[in-house]
Image (cartoon, rainbow, N blue to C red):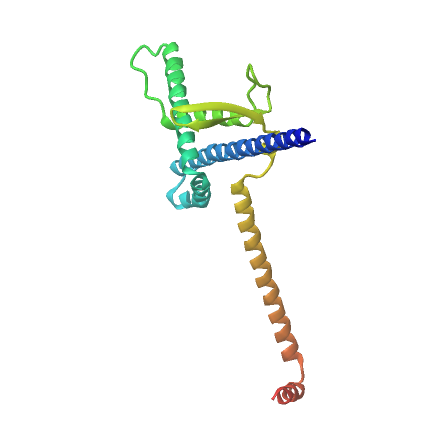
Amino acid sequence: MIKLLQKRTNVSVRERKDARRQEDDVTLWRDYHMFLKAKMTLLEVRLAESHTAFERADSRELEAEQAQAALDRIPGGFRAMFEVVLEERRQRVQTELEAEAGSRGSGGRSRQLDPDIVDRRALDELLAEAEGEVETDSTPKGYGWFPRGAPGDIRWYALDVAELVAAPTAASYTVAAEQDDTRRRLIMAIAAGIVGIVFLIVWFALPRGTQTRDAAALR
């Protein structure tokens, strides 16, 4: 009887460890996905501002601030690891693009690559892999890759991300909460204004004698 209880306890501990590891994996994937999306947003805002008139450049400042806030919410250790992953992919993409340009035979010194083009392609690739859009030898489509470890010792893992991709990110929840709060304050202000207008209409519509009697009764 004692051995049976001990076995059940061990199974329960192992299950709890597995559940905790799965929860950690999901949290790490969410942070990694948020990091890539925020980086892409900052890149798009920078490109948009460089192609629009100065007076319209501030229209996307809020979007950039939200993306930067999302990056700031990611723990420093994870963010440093993600930065290393992105830089390694940038270097690989740049090498590939330079090789493609060389294979086309420019006949002279190759033109320097646009860093924004390199950044976009690197982020596009990493996002596709993270969201499970890329089929590999070990995983089918639908399994998203994410890094684990520390700079200099990074290993890759995959999990089924179909539901995770469809779910709102932490940043989306924050933005939605802010929008709901703003909408609630606006509705309350409108309601207060309507009540005030109705009160004034009723007050001035009453005969002066009625107003006087009501004022005397209040005293």
